[in-house]
Length: 131
View: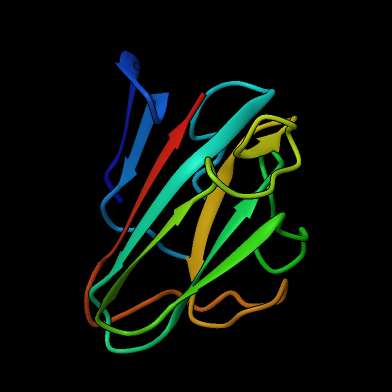
């Protein structure tokens, strides 16, 4: 897994950019390094041969398979999907989705809380933009 975080840049989409180039069912804990963050945009590029489920947790150290994700985002095999939360309804009052504790992520081959299988046959790239 190759996780990078860039902070302090100025963009209408946010100020923290997180890129995970090979997301698996092993959680990337507290990827933004902070609390009370708003997820504005998420893009997932699934280069595997099966549908994957990106799980986002409002938890600094979730246990994949046990901890209930805040969101589960399915992405079909060989496709790219983008979630733009800025223009739609939100739970933060100003667009985006509020994560009060932390943002952690994992990608599994099964949906639901219990899914723990890691993707194979290609990489799953996850990009998050937060404020």
